[in-house]
Length: 116
Image (cartoon, rainbow, N blue to C red; front, side, top):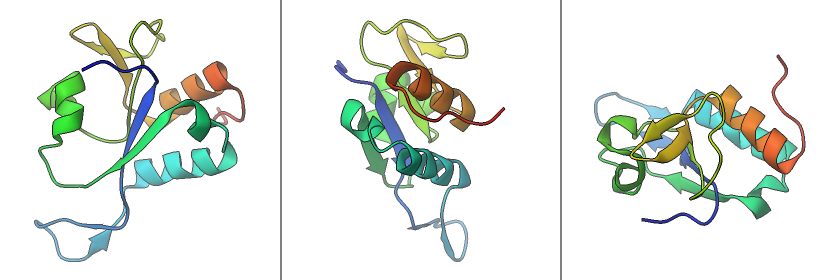
């Protein structure tokens, strides 16, 4: 599967977890939603996919493997240079923590990054 743009996967909120009672949101994904609100131009430069909570998450698995299907995750476009904090799966780079994701997005597309 090829990617022409960096692609951010976040869990669509709210969601239910069959293993637990209640309705939830992912705190790390909520951080990404906040970063997108602070930097609305990012949504014009990357693909943002709000995915359902249950596993398996086939679209992510097809890109970066079954062991890497947690969200949030930013999967970098084909041919992107590897950022220092990126992980790699079969030649594809990805970031899977809010601070590295937002640092990369701010450096690449401009805008506000996370406070150190």
